[in-house]
Image 1 (cartoon, one colour):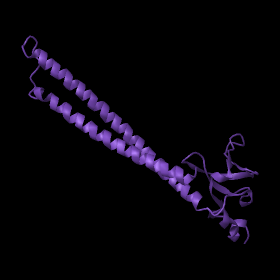
Image 2 (cartoon, rainbow, N blue to C red):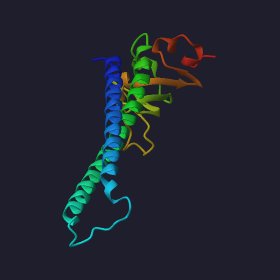
Image 3 (cartoon, helix red, strand yellow):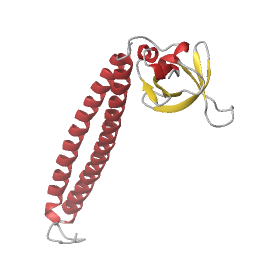
Image 4 (cartoon, one colour):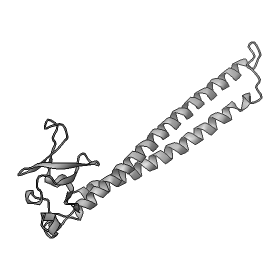
Length: 188
């Protein structure tokens, strides 16, 4: 599975969640209107009169309206949750797309020869997050990055998680370009 496929699926999921949120919002509005209509009998402010011949039916109507109102509130909360989830899924899909575009723009994968101690790298830390670190050690399969904790929290990241490298103020996103620019190798 490629990062482009992953990004496409994330966009599809975000769209599906947005549709679900819209549907739940419409349902919540309908339930609210239905509950408001059920309270129509009580609009004038007439209290329920115990002992009156209409008390039982009025109590039943009030209980039904209260239950409909509770269902409308639950539907509204479900719609809010779905909207929040859709918003988060959209942000996640956009981040995955940015990462997939950065990876897709490479002409070749990153290699140990592309890095040296002291380089600043931006690496993918989770599915959608990217963090910036200073290279502490260049290993055969990974980079050891300076976590700032004196060694005990230094993360290691595989080369395929690197999004960019900065050396001498020059940022490179394509590993092939890292050997073409004279400042990329530290030459004058």
